[in-house]
Each structure stands twice: as structure tokens, then as C-alpha cells.
Length: 454
Image (tube, rainbow, N blue to C red; front, side, top):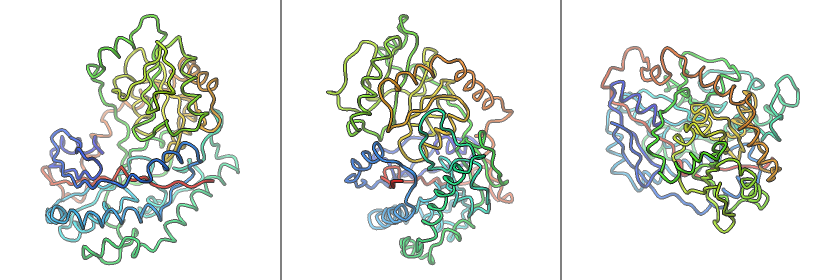
């Protein structure tokens, strides 16, 4: 949501972001940030990481997500009532919220809509849930694009083909699980926090009638065309300029080693800790990078240091400037868990991808990578050090992947106006004007969430 908030500010709107996720609030250029931080319960975090590394992730418990979201909203009411009251008294003209299942986003925006008539924009930071689309009035075939939490590909050739009956059935099964989770939820009692703020019995269907615009970050509609509506806008196609001064000097020297055939960059995000990975995954990573001696390998992965074999061509780092390393002309391939942000940054840098999905929508992103032929796919259950190294070498050396990702980048950037310049001007019958007061409410990113086994 950072780019969208900044685009609204640059378009002349007065923007405030409500940050509920970070102990140290994020900074947005020219944007006011309000912080309602409540330290999350990390008691289940280790178990969640182990589950993501070792179990299939084929869905998301909508019931549990709403229960957890309601619990967080109750904590806001109990612990941040003074700040919350001041927020609800502010006459925001427009509220931008994370999509389902962000309960506190929906409850807060419902109160602001009721008191001040605030308009509501729904912002999907990734591929939206099908239930969202149904509530927005967009019913589409469930057998034309991979479900958001689709089954993990077995390898680079295991790409869904919706001409095949088994792939359609697989999609339908997961879709039914999602819809069943919503339909079987007693929303009025599950989202009880709404009652404490004077709202009637909460229902998602009623809430969605307040939404005037849906902004979507996902980019898979370029690969699997789907129907749309005028009220749905896409903002995922944009690139951030690298600032190469962010690369530490010692890392810069390592990357630019003239004896190297190029740089392989490996990163699995800030959440996953490979210390808890099964032995075969640790061996695939630690031993696999030792098979890449002709390259310089930058590994930005949390892992127990005692498991790391020291090699002059491998550099393990706790943090690295990802955009800048990907954009460096020496970088040849990027191994990632496949979050949407990483996929987009790789496309912007025109660097072929090797994706090893772990949880959430990452398997759907792997399907995108395979379908567009912009990279290779690793399976976390079957990968070994040989497959690990060979798939990375293939992505780095085979010109087809470089050609395809350059083509995708060029299709993104060859536009008369960027998507970020299109969406800051929501049309609500002319009721919004420049200097409109806009509030952005983000979902609590520290929530553990839930997975289930196939």
C-alpha cells in the first residue's frame, strides 16, 4: 500500500496511514502516519514457520482469520480507546483498506462511513479472494485461472492447464473450501467488536455495498485473462528506481568480482527462518550454493550459522537492498519464496526467477512464473542440492527466460500513463476533490494466519 498512499499524496490528497503492524512505524514520503501498535502474540510463530516449511499450504481458514481479526479489534478498543476515538471523530472523505479478512479495517471504515459518510476503497495487496469478487458483483468462472491458494507445482513443467479436467476439479475443490468457510461463519457473533462501536450485526455482504472502488496489486491477469468491472483498477504494474548507493561497499566489491560469471541472489523474506527447516531443505540450500562456484552468491536468509559452510564465492547476509542487488547488471537469477513483491521486483529488474513457494499465494505466483516462462520452479518437498543448483543455473544461462522477462518488463513500462497515475483519482460522482482527507488502514502483518493440510 506504500506506493498507492504516496501516489495519492502526490496527486494532492491529504493522506494519513494507520500502522498497526510495526513497533517502529513505517515512513511514507509526505504522508502522516498514526501508530496503533499492540505487540502481537508470537507464541505460535515458530510452529507456523515449521508448518510453512514442512506442510502443504492449500488454503486459508477464513473462520480462524476472522476470529483472530476480531480479537485484534477488541484489543484496539480496550488498549487504544483514546487514539481510536480521535481517529473515528476525524471526517475522512475516503478510506483505503486492506481486503478480507482485515476485520479491524472493515469495522473502523464502517464506523467512519456511518458517522461521516466516508467513501471506502478496497485495496488487495495480492490476488484477491474469490469471495471478494462475488461480493463486488463479479462472478467469474472458477476454472480459468489458478486459485489464490492453489496446489504447489511439483516442478517447472507442472503448470495448470484448464483444458484438463483434473486441473479444473483441483481449482473447484479449493474454491468450495473458501466459500464454505465464509458461509459457515456466523459473522454477527464472530465479528462482535462491531457491536462495541454501535454498529448493527456485521455482515460482509452489507459492508461490501459501501465499497466504491477495488484496487488490486496482483499481476496475473496479464497471464490468465479474467473479466473485470469499471470499479476494479489494477496498480501492480509499476517499478521503483534503484539507488545503488544502498549496496554496502564490501558487498559491491563481492558482486562485481571480474572472475564471476554473474550474481545469484537468494532471499526468502523476513518471516521465514531456515533454522526450523527440515534437514533436506537445509542441505539443498547450504550444499546447493556450493555447486555455484562460477558465480557470486548472495544469500539473505535467516539460518543457524553453524550449518553454513564458508566459501569465498558465497556471502550470507542478514539484510540486503533487494531492489538494488536485483537491478545490478551482474545479477543473473533470483531464488525467492515467491511473494508478489519479490516477483514484481524481479520483473522490474529483468532478472529470471527461481521460485520455491512455501505458503499463502506463492504457489499461484509459481504458476504465473511457469506459465509466462520467466523462470524455474523448485518444490520444497522434493528439492535436493543437485536440483537446487541445476535449476538456478538453467534460469541464469538459458536465454529464453531472460528474453521472456525482458518482454514482460517492456510490456509493463510501455504505457502512456502508469497504473499508479491512473488510480489516485477515484470517481465517486465528483464528490472527491484535491486536498480530500484520505485515511489508509493496513492489515496487521504480524498475524500468524492458518494453513491446513491437503
